[in-house]
Image (cartoon, rainbow, N blue to C red):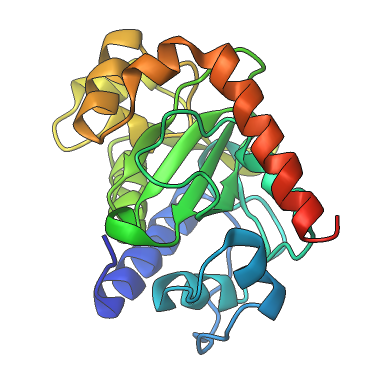
Amino acid sequence: MLDDMRVLRDAVREYRVAATAAGLDWPDQAESPAEQPPDRVYRIFGVDHVAEQLTWLQSQRWPDRRLLPNAGWRMPWLEGADVLDYLGLSVGTPFPWRQQLPLFHFDFVLYTFVLAGEHEGEIWRYEVSPDAWDSVRAATSLATLFDQWTKGITAGVIVHDDHNRWLLVDDVDGVDGLPGLDPLAFPVAPVEETLLRTRQRECGVNIAVVEEGFEHNEELSDAIDAAKASLGA
């Protein structure tokens, strides 16, 4: 889902306010206008447009530090075809594997932004593991994701680590026990299997493909290599 831009701006601003109140060093900066991505981005991801919601977020001049829960960071526009390697865990997704952009990186989880089709604007998550094929939607939109993180800070689920000076998901079990909080919005892995499978079915993941993950992962790896070769990588 593509957010109304006012809703997205408010959600990002409220997250920054909550994060700084928790102790994160994130000075307020004037909003920057949305700028178009580099031309090569369109070719790499096989799309003819990039949503304003994504271009606006990528245009904001955030400090060069880990501002997201569990020491996550926003990834810049990546113009090299090797960026497609990040999508190697996209097994069983209900949209073409290539039409998503790696956006938020955490130590063990990757979040992407879906670029086209009926899932455009959704945020999907993948555990960074050689034998985990847990493709699943983290949030229906960017604003929804930031709203979840803000609620997590308010509820004490996300706390500031004074030593490392970043935000951590402190009470993983508490996420599932609090009303209004969606555990899959938080960059924690692994996800409890019953919850994971239920959500995968709800958001259209091909469970049969996931259960035969190794075979399909090899097919996806070959497709990624072919796409990179077509881009001259």
